[in-house]
Image (cartoon, rainbow, N blue to C red; front, side, top):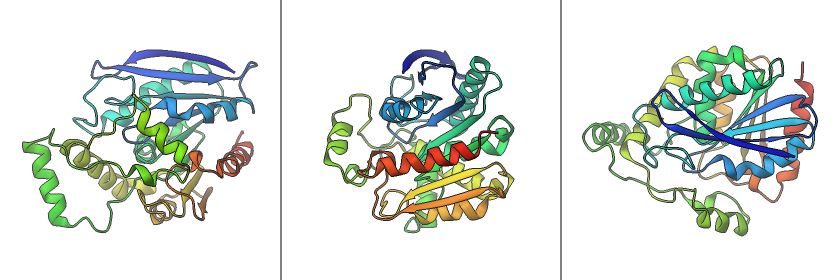
Length: 278
């Protein structure tokens, strides 16, 4: 496995870090990873190792305000910064490997970012694997709460609200400890602005999600308490893709690639990719 890394400048003039894991021989396809809230591409090295062993090149970027990229932690001016930065990266990867099929692999917030990206640019992608996707506002969030969130985002955009339930990421204690000890993971609270912008991204997907027509593999841990498994079922029903599959893994927590049964998940993704090479 070969490793490459570097930086590019997004449309906001922020330095965006990326890295890639490549097989020794010419790759047969490309995976582009869109990570979740507060994490970074480096947490997917084991994903890269698995798929490069099967002939795929795997690339990941750190979104603005995440990992090794520039930007205030857990802050974004507009949700559009996420899919726009992803677009610049996908176009770079296409230029590096012309003619190869490209698949998006979005997790959690990355599932929402990937979905909104597909509303405008699905012609660039051969298919998408979306796991634990943050594509709905939780049922317990009332309209009053949303109004307060919009107000805070406008008046106090950098006000810190809520943290992530770290214990809900995985049933493997080693994964939780590594997450806590990782200096590139942001373990503080989300800002009012990013919370509101995520809600706006969810709203856009709800209105336009039927535009999505490319092949989709939707995955979710059945015991996920960060993002409800019902949200992937919602996304499955929302899109117009004729070629779509939903797998709920009974008992698994949010990060299905970091669960004790991750090998099974990897094999399911690999089998799906093998069917969608052409």
